Length: 74
Image (tube, rainbow, N blue to C red):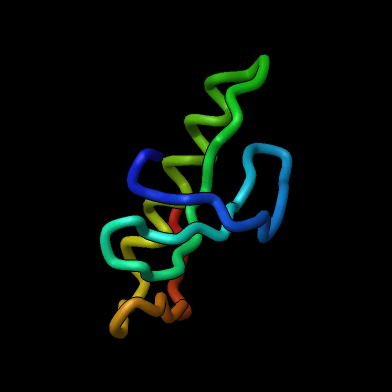
């Protein structure tokens, strides 16, 4: 997190906090999600993996993530 300066909090959830940050190298404003390890580390890891998988199917236009409909398989 040395690269980013925390400007504020965008949201909080069961497994983490999304911070509004400024990239110290570029000055760009970004969102950084920080996961909070709780009592159930396996559940946090599973949630993190699910979010990464979902982001991989998103279309990225410039610096904007565009969510696309997709079918989830179990």
